[in-house]
Image 1 (tube, one colour):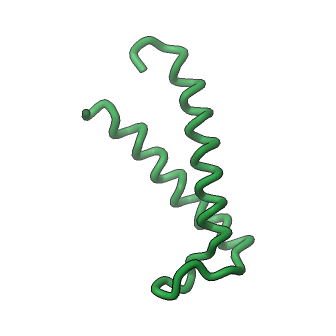
Image 2: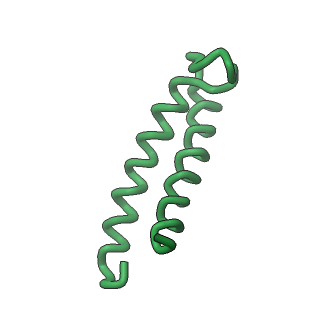
Image 3: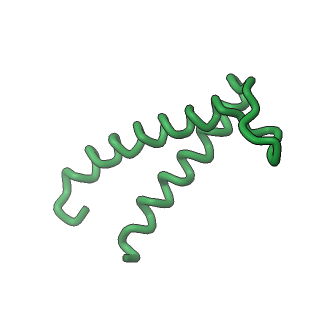
Length: 67
């Protein structure tokens, strides 16, 4: 169980950072009234970048037996 934490944490950080970047530069559509700075573009961009990062991380980490 402790073995999973660093990998899942990197996905959360990736999602948060890229959602901010996409929302800052491309965000025009508000996502929710509760948090007016969140945008749909940031939500989608963060999700796509997280998916890409997970594929890259799996391809790199699967080269070693202990991962």
